[in-house]
Image (tube, rainbow, N blue to C red):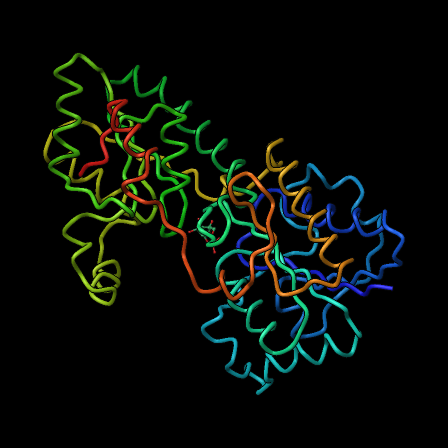
Length: 357
Ligand code: F6P
């Protein structure tokens, strides 16, 4: 008999349900008897003992369903060791609930923050297996996270839609793409959507170079320019600031996000009409794309295998086209960023895409 606790933490994404279904299906199709405890709303459910017992039926019909049947929340790692407002020791509470239910293992689905807490629980002696989710694809130790490809599809569709209106009006259009502090999503959606300029955090931009690229397009007879801007894009000037100084600057920024700042600067320098589109959380919504359905199901099945073999303390990741188990201590606390020298960046530049550098 295996008693499994499961939770989804952090920002949701597509294929969380597909991944959990993969875990559960692989377990119930084995010889082993299983009991599944679903903790609700991320680590909160584990802290406060808020869970429901689930059966295989709860996981039927959810392969294509976005979001998470368990609910999610952000429980910042920064404050996980601080007592809650009633003085409760959150880490101790999670351990107690784990032991009370006599769990063999926790299956935790999440991104960067989630992995820090998962690794802490491992250090505290709990059996943990994690699955890599996030539309940002910024999780260390895996080449790919589920949710990413689905988000690329949505952001690309947004850029596709902008194309026709941009062409009709001879305007500059900015599409702001999610991705937190990394540019994977923006780069991929930007290239897929045929963006002319792509601004990502890993390559700080010079606004004069951005303007130059727009003017060059005009000179060549192009009626419009489409710019994909990562929500974490940063100017060369700002990249020189310390984290603290930059945070202070952002607080005082008159614009809601970097895209609007870039838009204002372009408008001022070129006199061109600039419009900003922010698809925002739509990028995390809806049904997972077929790639993510397959990918998350595979990761889930491999997690099931680890549980059956009693191998704990790993994230099930993907490296060099193979599903691999990665020790949690190698994942937690590290960010996977795009290498500005990566061949994909060189190729994008060869296609004429400007990174404003
Ligand atoms: O990590 C996923 C993500 O969607 C990021 O791309 C984005 O910066 C962040 O979450 C938004 O967080 P929230 O949903 O809490 O606003």
